Image 1 (cartoon, rainbow, N blue to C red):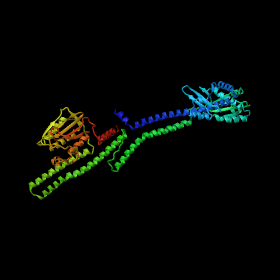
Image 2 (tube, one colour; image 1 turned 120 degrees about the vertical axis):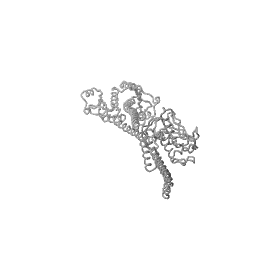
Image 3 (tube, rainbow, N blue to C red; image 1 turned 90 degrees about the vertical axis):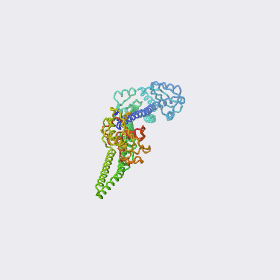
Length: 563
């Protein structure tokens, strides 16, 4: 499952999968584009090839003087082509606008039906509202030879070479391939082909191209002029993938792939630019900068780490400022007392007075040692680099130990321990967990009037330790302040009661590194304050690095925002 999750959020996998989808889309688009273009090309090819042949049929039909001759002509043409030709009124056929335009330009209209593989061909009769129509299922050699016969028939009305060539020049406007009259000697025909021309047969020459040139056919028909032949073509065969079409499709595909790659890379580039902008802002000293990157990939996690790092740096700087101000304030009083005691020692010779001043100095030095120890402990936890030696801890042994140590202080306060069975354990760093309960018990001991209760246990997958007293309690609006270093509340909980305001801050930081939380409320049994720390009973890791928890929490926030 972790492997699948990491792959799911992998930038490489997203780009790779996206590139595959882009290539698949481009391939489908290229196929559709080629099919569409070829559909138009083949339609134009059919119409261009058919126009010349149907023009000859229409021209021959117009030369017939009577309806009977026209019918005979159509019958002869039908036998010649092997297909049935007919004449129909234009108004009885539902032509499209584009087809009507072609008819007005004296061009052929081809309707190809792919499902049944046939084509209906229409050509206008000049000067009439009728069209010649024929249905062709396939192109045969008979039809090709029929075109040559029709062309010879048309040229038969012109007797000399010059008039025939002039007529060919006029007819060529209706053909998509060249028409000419050439000397048979110049055609480079073999003996068999020459003999066939002598027998007044039509000769077809096929050229199969294996290079860039198109494959084509050339039709040679014998003329009534001696040693002359009518040459039709070369007629290029339809080429499905011409070089210019392939180049065009490749260029379009490359352009689309480039757009797809840009679309895949741009969001990542934008995220990196946001992070770079955030780094520049932090470099200029703006520690309130936060990078808003939505997602679950490596860059989003990098942004979360950056935000956590910036928050941690800001918190450290603020903490150092608070510590500097608070320490300077806390040191001022004991140092002033020590200086006063030293002056008193210098000004008195009374042995009893000197010993009393020495005791005062010892007490103040001990107070300074306690303050320094608290500051060092808090700074170590605040800088984010404690090494937690996680192990199963017996909560019963812990509670019994704290009760025993608290009673040993000799305070006139009843200390009650409520501990679970010896089998109940929670994974924690025993040294830091002991410090938490010890600080909470010491804090309760200062403010309790007659009784404190120390308890621990496991509930719903979480371990907890709780210390409550019967003192004045903490107002609800001040409960968040008790975990702030050197915080002062009302007169019921000032430093006149002892302490430096760091004990609960240390507890709060330990709870943070346990991935737990501290809370304070009113004790339901004693009526005073109740402090409780909860943390998961399963360990996070053997060693928790500097900002690992902060990073994980930031990442979770980003994911929740996206969801």
